[in-house]
Length: 65
Image (cartoon, rainbow, N blue to C red; front, side):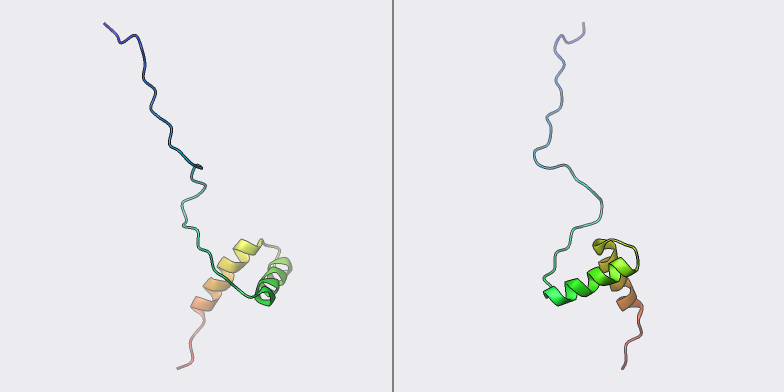
């Protein structure tokens, strides 16, 4: 005989996950943020994407030793 009442799994509390990448916050001076926003506008991208691309460029640059 089947169960007469189906038990639905409980929902998780809180906001659902929005992505797989971890969120990283950093404090930066206002002039630096303005420069990044200007770079993003010049390269037709968002501010978040501009930060990612600029960090990648910085990591690929050769260091002077």
